[in-house]
Amino acid sequence: MASPLVSVQDVPDSATLLDVRWQLATGAQPELYASGHIPGAVFVDLDRDLAAPPGARGRHPLPEPDDFEAVMRAAGVTNERPVVVYDDANGLPAARAWWLLRYFGHPEVTLLDGGLAAWLAAGRPLSDGDDGPHHPGNFDAHPGGMPVLDADGAAKLGTSGLLLDARAPERYRGESEPLDPVAGHIPGARNRPMGDNLVDGRFKDPGELDREFQALGAQSGASVGVYCGSGLTAAHAVLALEVAGIPAALYPGSWSEWVTDRSRPVATGDEPGPGVTAPAVSPD
Image (cartoon, rainbow, N blue to C red; front, side):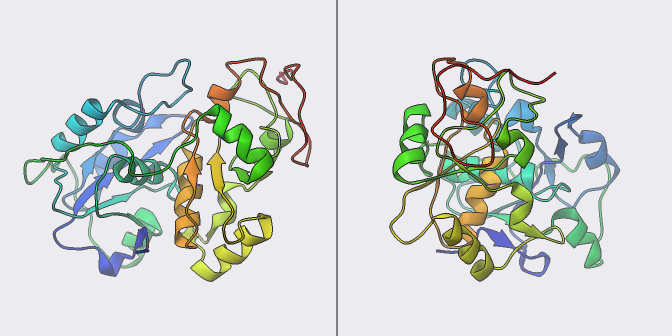
């Protein structure tokens, strides 16, 4: 299995570069792209381009294939050229682009390990303004390139496999829920916060990640799935698992979809827990 990561030194000259800078509090950050980006990179808006409108399927549902295909073609993505995605936020928004491109069938997409900070640390230049795509895109989007879970599949993994919750510990425990109407976690899920995948802004080495995931239950032959709040941070976890050589399914709707059905059980506290059918109450 080829690594989903690429170093600054190994970015192919022929690569299509996608800048996916985004923050939860502010959304997409095109102004940062305009003030300085990797030469040739095209800006992609996570909320607009990498998700369908929020609703019953969660806060960041998967985009429709035709919509995603059109966005990628407008960004210059082709079936033949490699794609490199990056951000300035520890890989979280870029991992969403990586996962979607893989899910929709692109054969060669990697995430720039260390992101824009690594590029600058290597003494590489930035460009300002809007570079735009340097070549027309012909990407064909065909869903199914990465495994996914629905709510029933996530519930099953909580009892028969390994289901990881990639949110912050206080959200997993149900002590705080700033975004969704119910606090807690899917019964049986184990907490693995996104930050545990990184050291100094870069992904840990494959051996270390493998040992840590195995300690959580990702032994050989185990089915592994990941969720978070709305499917973004979970993509980062799927990427980290792939670095470790462990295939994993993503629950795209994640917690924001799970809680739309108040009959689904909710667990709280440090342990995976059996959950209760009565909905938890979100703290103020």
